[in-house]
Image 1 (cartoon, rainbow, N blue to C red):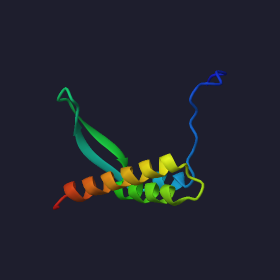
Image 2 (cartoon, helix red, strand yellow):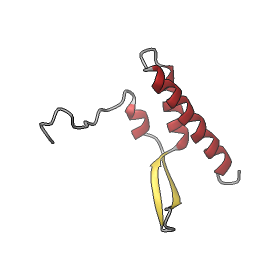
Image 3 (cartoon, rainbow, N blue to C red):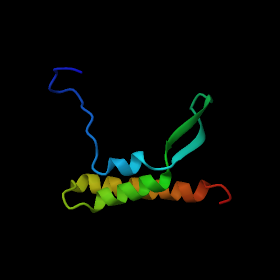
Amino acid sequence: MTDDEDALRAVQARRANVLLGSAPFSAPIVSVTGRMARMTTISPSAFVDFKRWMASTADRDPLKVSRDRLQASIVEELANRFQPGG
C-alpha cells in the first residue's frame, strides 16, 4: 500500500464473480525463449461472455467498448480454432 495518489489501485469489476466462479482453463504455453510452463486462467467462454457484457453496458467508455468487443472476438476465434478435437 502507498500514500502516492498517482499509484495504480486494483478495482473490482462489476460482475467479477462471473469470472471468479468460472471453470478453470489450463494450457501449456511457450515463452519467446522457448521455456515452457502451464497457464491456468478462467475459461475462454467466460471471458468472451464477460467482455461482451461489458461492451453492452450503457455507461462504458466508447474506447473501451471497441477494445472489449475486439478482445472477445479474438479469444472466441482462438478458442474455436484450438479447442480439443477442433
